[in-house]
Image (cartoon, rainbow, N blue to C red):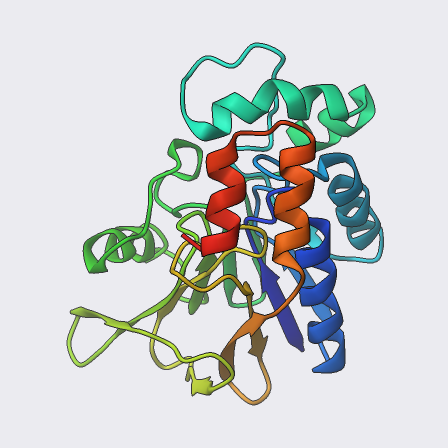
Length: 248
């Protein structure tokens, strides 16, 4: 099995298609979308339909914190400012589908979640070894789980248990396969397809090769400037278009 792991699509169809095409070229046999299908970007309905077609073909699709759009935003974040617009772009059926998605899924020795395993619905961020450890400890009752994959933080990181019980962080390099032997436990944040925030405008995804026991993080170029122009054409907040052009 070669599992393509994609998260934080954020209604960016060209970025999603670029990552899916790359994963296909690399022999992906399975797909998992780890939430935040919509929000921020200009293609919510199109991305929802693409994910629904992936689900029909057997992909795992999870719900993220942006995937319950409402007509009445309750906050003042940039995500809240696009929530009402996103709501208007989606049909009732599409909104119901997003709301029905699960928060977590398990596939063999793999646990999938948008945020963290210890509190999936509280949308905690895995930004350091402490939060990664909390997420892994929540699954310590299940010795079969060796890999935890999530998104939410919009950058790519890998954590593993070294000698003893201490968790260690590893910064991956794009395109370099990392051995991830199941005799250790691993947690990875796979980055953002639709809105990277690490200073690199390229889309992010990761590919787990279960047979080879390797995990490879990928960065994929696409026409991000055109997507930013579409965001401006829809009068979405300028800061979001600017963020897409800067990658942060």
